[in-house]
Length: 136
Image 1 (cartoon, rainbow, N blue to C red):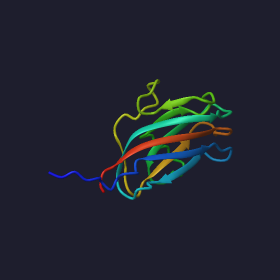
Image 2: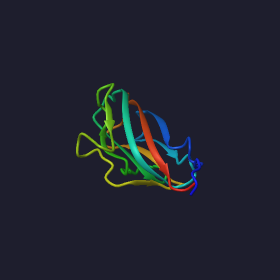
Image 3: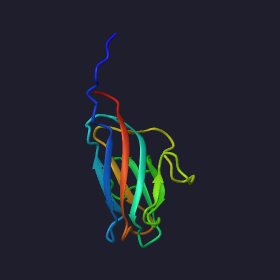
């Protein structure tokens, strides 16, 4: 038997800055930074500044968002949450904002951010994402 440090040391955590928009429902896309399939094991949204309108943020995995809401990671997360609020997207306090099954972030997929019904003017936040690489 042997024990060695795996090459995955130092991987597994991302912080994504989010800034709302008055012009589009697409808040942005982040390409998988590892270049290999990963499982998202945790996601926490920290609200620095609440949005001025009632609207819902959808966070998911797929092709770069062009008007389509993905919701593998977070669904119907309000952008007008109070500044300082932390929303746990894996073990939620509300039934509509949850990671229901392990979200596989394939090598060429994006983490997408889309706001529905209204725009996200004024919203500023950080998404903290934890993940596990499925290969070395």
